[in-house]
Length: 162
Image (cartoon, rainbow, N blue to C red; front, top):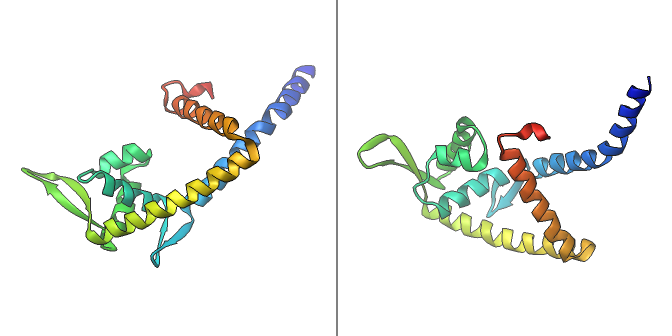
């Protein structure tokens, strides 16, 4: 009986931090997939960041995007289809290879990507200022170092450490 009590006690202590992390992940996930308006266009962060990534990496493929964003090729294909159908991205076949489709922003896509970058610069600057004011620059730097290490852990071949 005391073994179960010990496990419950340890769980209660450790789970407080885990719950904070889970809440952050859920809230940030919801934020990423909520729609934002950029020049009268509604896109979620995944869509607009995909557009900007294509703009910054002309000729990238959906397969490369799926690896970059850790998403299935099917999920990325849906995002790309929306961007193509909206006139922000165009597909071109690689020379001498009709199976490999490269992605490029249109002029319209380049303009929206620039608007998005300006929005992100302002938003990231404001958020960073707020966090430094609330927690201090050294704590914020430590937070990002920890996130980098957490990302490495999640990408590692031993995610069972979690």
